[in-house]
Length: 258
Ligand SMILES: NC(=O)c1ccc[n+]([C@@H]2O[C@H](COP(=O)([O-])OP(=O)(O)OC[C@H]3O[C@@H](n4cnc5c(N)ncnc54)[C@H](OP(=O)(O)O)[C@@H]3O)[C@@H](O)[C@H]2O)c1
Image 1: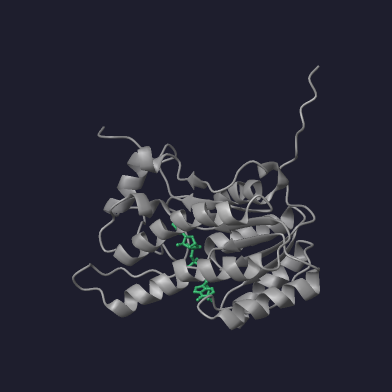
Image 2: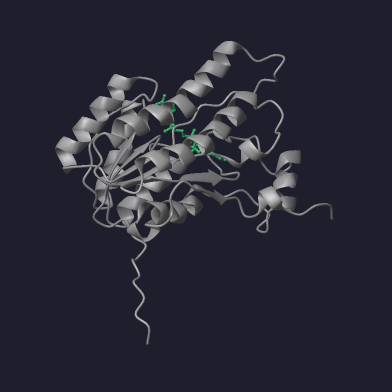
């Protein structure tokens, strides 16, 4: 029998930081990592949601650090990074799941909206990657992209453009930081979270479009993104670097017509 080397898909024993880890996809990832045996720091700007999520992570058996962070502020990222290294002894995984979105048309949108979305989404991912990589000997960085960057969804110009930047950023960061640090993005389809709110509820035209173009006929639950993140964060992904993993149930190449 041939003896293949095979590394299990797990984050057990790893130390992970999830920015935007107090809501939606990020919170599900933080829970999933903790349930799988990782120590996890879930952070965002809100002290209350950070404390609440930290309590949940402890209940799941993880060691954690309660620390707020704003990705638009380098000093705040440095504080988070250094506090995590002091408490957990290092960092193996960084997830950038922070979110900002604006829903104005190109004609009506303001430059301020554009700057805010970029500052949080793309610049925030750049800052966090740059600063955390300085103190990661090896491991995985996972920016959260979006399938919107391959679509033309009206009234989503800054968001779509920033997410396009995240895919490009992922490729180049992987090239520069690999093989020690692997950088792979996740590109979710439509996931039921604060961000999507009621925009895609049943009865809306957008929900009907999602139903038509996915095999399940529905939005994803945040927990359905967890497996992809555990894989990319795990040592099993040792030969996966610079890629973007789409988790959209086929939406982007979905059914055409009836
Ligand atoms: N939901 C979807 O359908 C979908 C689809 C594709 C991609 N995505 C992407 O997935 C990621 C997560 O989205 P989500 O739907 O889970 O959003 P969400 O539920 O609105 O959560 C966003 C998180 O980001 C934090 N955040 C916002 N601004 C921040 C800042 N300046 N610094 C640090 N943290 C900040 C929020 O907490 P505070 O406000 O307390 O800071 C919150 O924890 C985003 O990158 C989003 O673009 C979402």
